[in-house]
Length: 402
Image (tube, rainbow, N blue to C red; front, side, top):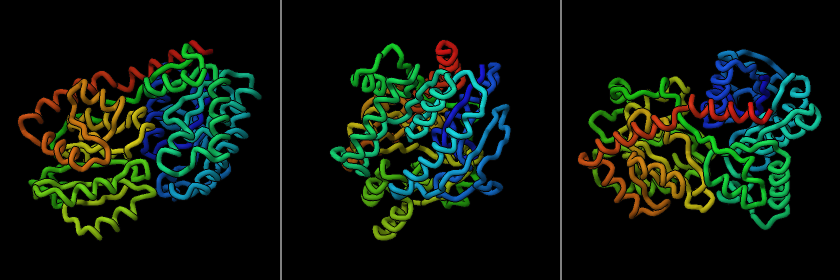
């Protein structure tokens, strides 16, 4: 089977779509498929090219048996709505043009952003090959949820029409949550062609380990109860709420680290200074190979999103990596994610953007009497969400679709 996969993020980028796409494609290559990924030159999240890369029209490399074609795109930081749209459109156009000359049996386009899926759909039309739409986030609904677009505008309604047309034309739809399947089916899409393949974790890369003492000492966190947020600092993550809560934490043993970059990072650093917080440390983006060192020093993994009905349907992928390293989850997300964490007893949750609820959950999760039980729950959770099993499930969907 020859698979053409369109995704604008791919390693060495380390965000959720890059990781999911790479780990799935690697597994498919091991299963005997020939996989080509068309992606951008790595620049996320700062909008700056990674060392060793140039924004050429086209370049090709091989990563773990995966043929990776990188195409030119307008590179912009993960901030500013108009610039990001131009970024997305430029990649989508280049991916379409280059994809016309790639031999394949099936095409996969992943969203967000769904201009990638538009390219996959048009490639399907011109190449007369089936295509699968992978939905990792509901666009444009998620844009409206963070206040970046008004639902009543012409632009929003037009994007909704495109979204519906993509669902209709796809031979199959792969979603990452049960909620996504229900929501798409409610819009009149045949539920029998919608398959759920959730995110997961490669347990060979994220294993329980002792705390990295050298790193703890370097950061001045030895002896602290470390609460860690690792990921994108964007509008959806409501990290300003966490800073407000940090101001009210009286226990001097507790220290919060925030690792990563994003459109809100600079504002959050300034806010921390204004609040005169001495229990928050901001850390820069690190490579994927370094992340488990930082997870190792955590006592608790923080996962937080804005309070929105839209985010009740998402499952942040970071819960799986942290659970795999036995780091209990302090969760500020409602809906399906909350159900997973609570069903496995892999941590505790609070009402998003509710300070009283956050403080109560924090006290509960650092209680030594609860902690060992949360770790046992993390172990069970990570076992059930092993990435290789999930990749195999999607591979079967691809086979059946052909």
